[in-house]
Length: 78
Ligand code: SF4
Image (tube, rainbow, N blue to C red):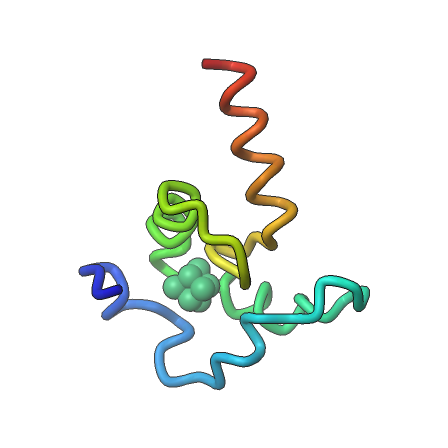
């Protein structure tokens, strides 16, 4: 993946492992979400993940479960 928005990503150069939290551990996603909250390209990141149905990790501040919820909501309102 090499998207133009990635050059501005707040996670650039950070330990990628924090963006792949254990989905069964409460609050494991919080460190990644904190980075995403300050990221200037979080919207592009999230839309990329939604478009490519990324299954794992935190994208645009959303977990896999949260992304599935967004997809379902969009389908209902389409
Ligand atoms: S929203 Fe989060 S995962 Fe996406 S580019 Fe920004 S910091 Fe990285």
